Image 1 (cartoon, helix red, strand yellow):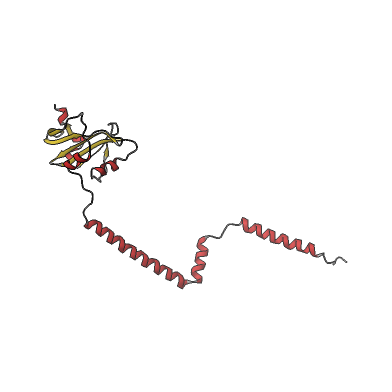
Image 2 (cartoon, rainbow, N blue to C red; image 1 turned 180 degrees about the horizontal axis):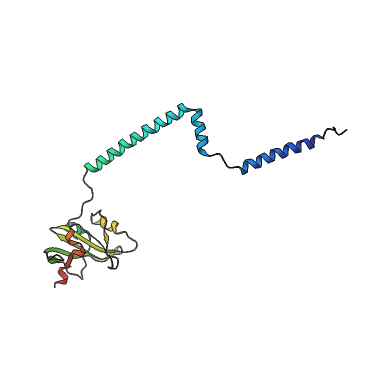
Length: 197
């Protein structure tokens, strides 16, 4: 008499318990690694994968050709930005009225060499202060300034038509400079015209 069949609701409780347990295990167990699922895809459809690989190789080759053409164009075209001439700088920037310019002012360099060049102090703005420009034969020899209000020194130099990166002078209260004629770097100048007056 022990073989009495259980009522239907008791049988469903067992099955329901099994389903819930499997669902919880599915949530707890980690996802299968991506590599295995990708390997299964490759095994299922090798032709599709080869087509994808060929398409990506063609795209890479096309991109390489375009990059080579762009590089060739850049190399063949001269730089569009050129340093301003003395005349252009004097027309674009305001000269400091309190500091007289030195035309053909004498420079003495640390190696004992001497030369003459034009020195102009620029009026302070909200973008820079204590700016000066030295010109040799009508071309910029050096630009020196202190950037203000989080303006980047490189951005200020672009206004002079200079795309080279400036140097920040140590111990000089935030001065930046660029010398297009190397002997006019600050560390090469022993005495400037205003120091010889």
